[in-house]
Picture 1 (tube, helix red, strand yellow):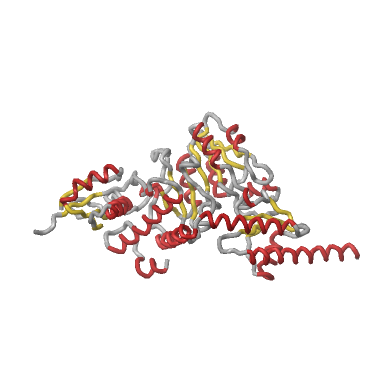
Picture 2 (cartoon, chains in turn purple, blue; picture 1 turned 90 degrees about the vertical axis):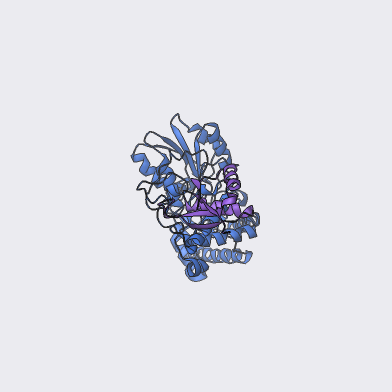
Length: 74
Length: 373
């Protein structure tokens, strides 16, 4: 079965950098990708994660006070 | 920097391709390293600008409104004095607290200058002319007690004297990469403490940030709201390399070495007839920047001779700091400034002092011959 992905949408590239660093430090896989057009008209990047990690990552970001816009399924 | 130009070279935050992301990582790591160095929790509070002067302008023009009062010292660089002077014309009140003739500042005098409408205390950590250290920690405490914002210009100290936004109670910290952080020119900015409300600090320039591109209004989040336009990513890559070198070398080791060399330089200079040293004249109370003049010789002449005859390069004149020179008593003629760094050695101290001794001796000889005639 293909891996199901979700993306963390953020305001700024700097926020994506912070999330990437945090996820890597916790051993959570992620990849920075351009924001899919259907999710946002922004020209920036977002953090792709495994959909199954989304709840844990949401909690992790919240407890570290990392500002995000939303987590969307791909 | 070479690696960045050859292998990255993309605009951070402006696209989603791998090189743009790599550039953004370099910039973010630099923010994080600077945040660590200055005791800042959130790396996104580190704002990169054109240089430290740009950071100071953002803070002063962004924060101060007509009717506000600001307290500063009598040792400031024009990076602070010129924006304050411009703001004064638009109705901001400025009190300049006088310093002692060696450039030192009594914290109580700053407290005495506070008024009901005082909003900010701003000063440099150390003079760029005489190296005199100002008591920022004490003044930070005064600012906290009086519920004012405290801003520090760390151009002369960041990287060699500890600066900690928490411990020193600093709300706005202007920094530069090109001095004791050993980075390239054109890297610097402002770190915005948590007590500063972003609503109160207006951006001084607007433009593209790579974020919220669908909107034509400036974003309101850090760091983008204060960082419009393409950053000096190659310079920032250089700054990151420098910060790593600094971490490896150790700030304390550098300070210890500079303090020792500064003490040696001062003690030898003191023995040379005709040399007058301005500032504390005590290594512990200053950075390794020594202001001096040779009696009877213009600073520019001494500077030129040191350059042409001895290969010793120093800055002479007023050092963009007329206020400091007035305090030190060297306005308008200025002085010669010797600056030591992590790469100087005792040999360099002996060379420069021998050069000044030779020039002084020659002058002294001329003076005697002049009398005999």
